[in-house]
Amino acid sequence: MTRPKTDSPATDFAVALLDEFVRVGVRDVVLSPGSRSQALALAAAEFERLGLLRLRVRIDERVAGFLALGLAVETGLPVLLITTSGTAVANLHPAVLEAHHSGVPLIVLSGDRPDELRGIGANQTTEQPGIFGAAVQRTWDIGAPTGEDGEQDAAAELARDAFAAASRGPVHLNLAFTEPLSAATALAVAEGLEATPPPVVGFEGLNQRIAAAPGTVVIAGTGAGERAEEVARELGAPLLAEVASGARFGPNLVVAYRELLAEPEFGGAVERVILFGHPTLSREVPALIQRGGVETIVVRGTSADDYNPGHRVEAFVNAVTVEGEPGPREWPGRWVAASRSLAQSDDVAPDTAAPAGEHAKAELAAVRATVTRTALAEAVWRATWPHDRLVLGASRLIRELDRVVTGKKIRVHANRGLAGIDGTIATGIGIALASQAADSKGTTRVLLGDLALLHDVGALLFGVGEPRPRIQVIVGNDHGGTIFDGLEVAKTAGESFERVLLTAQQVSVEHLAAAYGWSYVRVDTRGQLDQALTASLGPTIVEVPLDR
Ligand SMILES: Cc1ncc(C[n+]2csc(CCOP(=O)(O)OP(=O)(O)O)c2C)c(N)n1
Ligand SMILES: [Mg+2]
Image 1 (cartoon, rainbow, N blue to C red):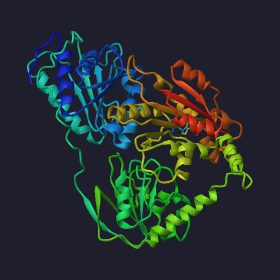
Image 2 (image 1 turned 120 degrees about the vertical axis):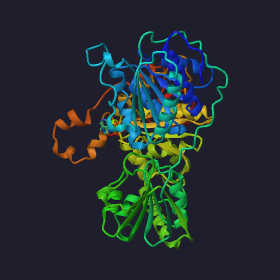
Image 3 (image 1 turned 90 degrees about the vertical axis):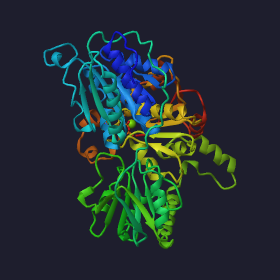
Image 4 (image 1 turned 90 degrees about the horizontal axis):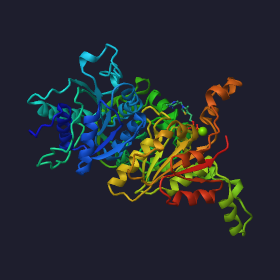
């Protein structure tokens, strides 16, 4: 479409580009301020004013990147990220890497100087094309628009290509601009701006037919989705589903999968594995796949690498269809029953025990009991319902949830592509904002450790005048990375362990919350915890002191 031109080819190009992104289905933009990218930023603000895009502004590009990731995880659509040149672009790298490894669609638009100003020491100019290496599906380096005819059409074509290429992960459009870097952008967003629904992105190719067979289990790693649960039922197979799989529910769910995989009559009897998603939380799963006599079929997701421990996977397929009837109920029934009895023997909570007949006293004791990691994991899980979202950081707590929580059909996300402790809060805010924009009335709860919280403090800063989501950031504060306590090095490293691995910290989380205008609740007992999790105080940090 040809639209009226302004005095700035940069602005004309930016408007045409964003216009086409809107047409093909983009709804969310996150930007960080900067001069070189001003045409894109001003155009994005104008599209927001017209109600065609939702815009979020974050001063820290690393935060912006993870916020965009969260928005894309929740909506399933590519999200635009706009930055200026230089280190600004590099700050997107962590989110781009995570998006690459978990197959999340992001479209990076970085402003740059034109070719002739690169490599000569011009201010804020570095080698931007290719900066993300193999972590992007595709990179474009586009010369500065000059106002020639056809540039707007070229911009539209670029948007269509980038949108299509982003269906399996991030892409990078490096866009050179020259002065005038923008014009007054009272948009010529002309008539006919009716956004068409986005194309459905599907997988092509191999759909394997499978039937029930003895010794089959279904394993669901992060991002597996509900199909894993369905296939387990259709096959009559035990379902070994990690906590962020999206499949941790149903009659075949085996919570204590780790313990049972170690048992000869359970793990030892497995002959075939149907695997969905990206398992990262146990050693037993990769060990099982690498064992002789076990055939594994991996149902591909969107992540960059196919899961293939020891290169022992038999087949990679894009989908499975189950033929015939489920196998005998005895097989999954045995796993489920064994898992339940293991969970019950775990249930002894001495600090809540009370003499028979003194029911009220016992209840009071439970309410007053201090919060353990297990109690925290269970309370957060209990408080979460299908309209809510749960985001889990990389810490001991995700492992605790994976160990204990029972089946529940709720939406759980964890950045397990690379399992970084970075960007957890920003990702959670992205998920919260996107779910609320889609009319969910729920609360997003982010459960993370103290180091992960401190790593992403910048995410607590909202854009001026932007909506605040219903979000609780729940920090299990054990003063440092106590996950390392469980490693061999904790026994061998001596004094240096605390200094270079545990890295204890004494930051006042309360003051941090106050500085960023978040509500703050400190929780010392299980009663207070349940109360805090159901309160609605706007964006809130819930601090839960935990023993090391
Ligand atoms: C970006 C990044 N840096 C470092 C690590 C290594 N790492 C994994 S867990 C962890 C400590 C986490 O501490 P905390 O968030 O307090 O959780 P806790 O282990 O205490 O439960 C670190 C530093 C990582 N995963 N990602
Ligand atoms: Mg910690």
